[in-house]
Image 1 (cartoon, rainbow, N blue to C red):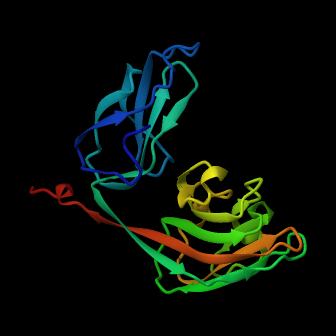
Image 2: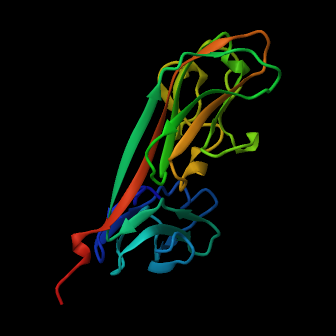
Image 3: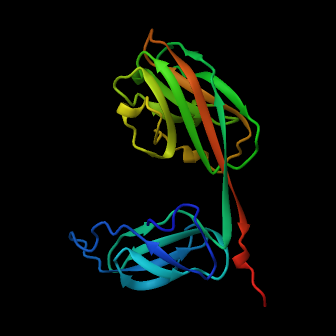
Length: 256
């Protein structure tokens, strides 16, 4: 489902166009001529039908519910076949505002070679703002004799075990001496050819596992260097933390 997009805000009782990549489902042995368009206003727990048995052509005008709801999802469901597609979360009757704050540091911390898989804290920092995380991205600039030797992870405030590490990179490139990249769940698949070029790539472990947590506290960058005696330097890093607020839109209210 390509519309609604993530965190879109649509007015109550408004006409909206649902779009979807049909992806060959009208042929290729699937042969689905019609679909149902459903909506959930409780984050996918239950669904109700907006339009039934409409053409599987990738677009459909529908009417939004008359009551506001924050956590909505659209489902496009095949008629007579077993497949469906879900939209990202969006809202009806609310205005969603996303605010992002970025902590950037240039610690020039040494990444000295350690014993095999011995994680150690390269740098820690205190994030002073207490917000509920809706998105988090990590930027890393590293010089190293061979970045294929590295495991790199992020520890949330209060974490006490290695199992709580969100590993963003783990021996992802066969060779290379520099890393200058942002790890972002909304990035593209890792490309070693561009890992030193300031691009955004999907991390090994999803950073969305931190969504819903408080941002307040000590965050820690941890690195394991599995080869001895290679060395390197964490030149700089950044952590971007985003949060969202929601307010009822004026269109939600009317005179009686």
